[in-house]
Length: 302
Image (cartoon, rainbow, N blue to C red; front, side):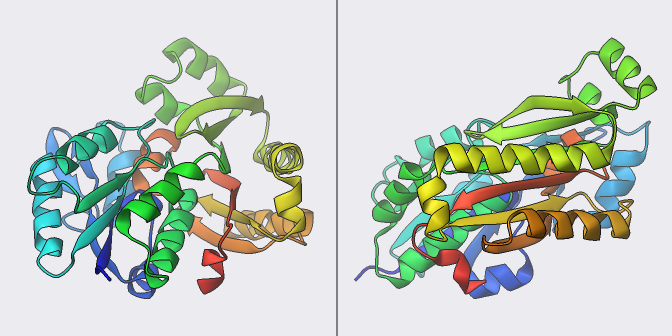
């Protein structure tokens, strides 16, 4: 049986505990460009430093895919100890890094040894994918079999994100300056959605309390329409996420309690910080929730 390694970028927001539990062989960091200087999360930029950069109106913060040479160097290092790699990466709908990595995996030195999963996931849906991959590795599945499973189930998740301010969406070009100005004046809170790996608008409300209710209702409706049988079998997990530092701890606890009450018969997976590259677009004080179908019980390892 071949020895399969799990390699990730940090789009799943894995904690140190997750990395150890799942035996992740390598994390390839997503890079950030801050005033034309490159930083890597967890390497030369801390969580707190990122938020300091983000809140400074004079500082321009954007994301950038890891250089393909960095990715290939990581693969080479891991392949010294393993026969194959399953590489789980940020959705192709949000970055070109997945397509770039897939092309690189077909180069002669990696062909048949590195398998890049285009499972179109991000944040905690990619964490579910990481848990699934680790479980399948334990079952003795090959990297190709794991890739096929993750891609087969790639549409079985959904995420909703309530944004506290339009400022960062304006900076990222997702709303016009005029719309952002009007929205800020009216205190509008946009709700974004991630389905099929793409970040799109979903709704607009006038308060975070309304946003919380809207996200819960949208998630419940989606599960009822798409995965009612899976929900009855206990296969649908619920998660929440947030972009912390200024978020009122009381509001986060209230949101978690509301979600658990609304989905009291569902397995609750995580309450995690949003990955920083998502926070580049949402800004601080965002709240998110969503679901993932876990057909093999992988999240029970949590």
